[in-house]
Length: 542
Image (cartoon, rainbow, N blue to C red; front, side):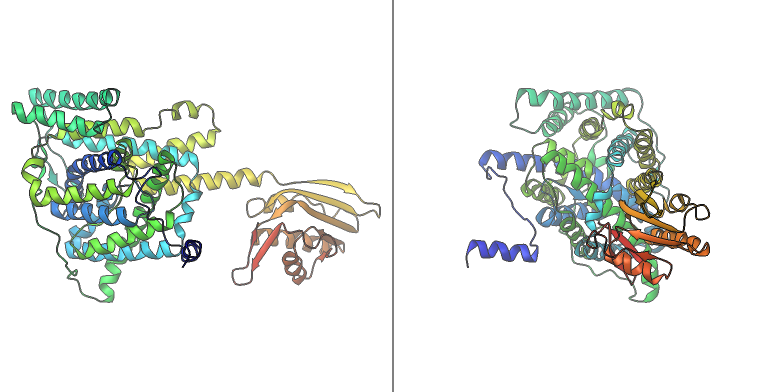
């Protein structure tokens, strides 16, 4: 079979792009960068996975297994090389109530159902709706995310073991003080300095990895008394084992897990697709939204059957990866395999790494993630866009990323509808036969329907009125209702109304109302409003 025929067949089946190599090929230099980037990400994943497991109220290995399995599967079949996935805080805060009330087995069942819902979303190509997220929402999301990552590191400045699980995640705890606090702050600053200087000296080793190695060597060599990874919990364990969630297979179980599954699936996909866009802007890649939904869903189904807490894309770790040079699937696969290696044989060494080094890496991620130019943008963009940027940032910090994005999209959509609602107007003139002609300008939809009705004066108008929609767009059912309302008023006055420049579908629908006379000979193929659905009763535009 020829290559052209194979390519055509693949396109018809929408086979996902699983290319492993960049355009220049996987050279030894590129392979080294990818592996070192993966190692850096794996080191940063350990404390995050453990912390999120504590937040959800489950064993640390449940979080580590999720980071490994979700990270590996999405690396293999995900929609965007360079992305890192694993256990995340956005999902953990939803899981904590479920675990507290029903136990960890219900969590595993919930994760499986969550994955199934995400696969359905990918198969239905719902990932394309991420295109509806406006740029001000993305700016607010990125800024809010940076603040959230920064605040999440504050827990590392508390005395290990002093924090308690309150049922809503880890809270409380005593802050470090005295020499221990100053030492940790100094090490954080040293890590950030190494990361800043390293690219100016050499790019042989990713700067974040160099920062971790330098600070870890200093702490271990001098025996400095600062919190280390092992102070959070032991990460030693075996391979994840296949495990069917031990829950009753009945309607009651479904009623318990379905609401959580829907929420987790939505949060996971929103965060993953926004990460996909963010990584795409840095790497210059586009597309892959539906593929990413399917990959996330598959990963969560598998994770639920292997004792993991599920997960989604991790923006912070993805930023570490791309900033370290990771551009292919090799880096993400290496990160997952290194993490498994840490669990199986490397725990004694990894547990000695100081938390200060990892905090320093994440602080540099914060600096690189925050859109500092947004302060300048706020003064230049329209007031509503500036409001959306600030609103999304605040909601991201106060609630979570998914809620912030939904709120931002809704506010932006309402603002757009309001602005378009004010654009409806009509130019009037008198025809040769004495008929009054209304040339309607602007979109006619639910927001402008009232303004459209107010354009007409049935009592004062002549016996014959022509409404020309050449400069308008009839969008939805509310628009149809508004046109019929105007027609009814003219009929009540015993006057005739004629419509021009509507599509054939509009002709038929409006004629059915019995009030209207549509000029079907006037540009009958001119379609400003098309695709009227008899089933939904909605009129859609081009």
